[in-house]
Amino acid sequence: MNQDKGPVTRLNSNYMKQYDAQMERHKRRKKRLYRRLTLFAVLIVAVFGYLLNYHLDQRQLYNEKVNQYEQLQQDLDKLKAEEKDLKEEMNLLKDTDYILQIARKDYFLSKEGEIIFNVPEDGDLSY
Image 1 (cartoon, helix red, strand yellow):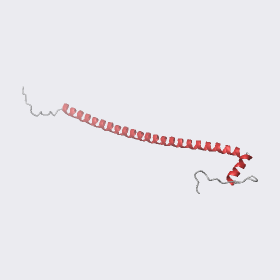
Image 2 (cartoon, helix red, strand yellow; image 1 turned 180 degrees about the horizontal axis):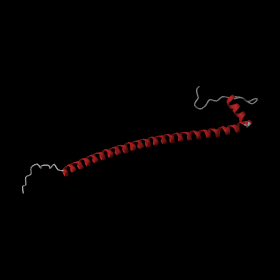
Image 3 (tube, one colour; image 1 turned 135 degrees about the vertical axis):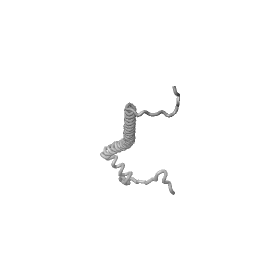
Image 4 (spheres, helix red, strand yellow; image 1 turned 60 degrees about the horizontal axis):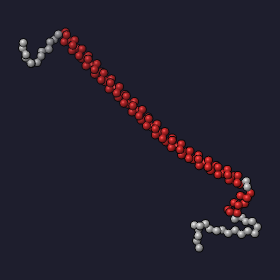
């Protein structure tokens, strides 16, 4: 028995040719598998990125719509209060005493023999 650790000589037989061909096919299959897995991973990342971007856009749009809804709700409340005040004033304008009071106050109309003095407000005291 010779325990020579030198280079091993390769036999040029049919078995070795078949074995080399099988190993080459195995390498090609493995390379194709890695390519397919890489392509699949890239597609998954791209789809995930698109979905994430779409989700964030939808959240932003939702927040804008909520803010717009709240603003419109506040405007509606103001308009309802204004409508209520205007309806009350319409009812008051049907009363002749109220109309006479407005005429005296705003247009300085007086009853016969009545004198109207224009008194300044508290902040308008100038001598």
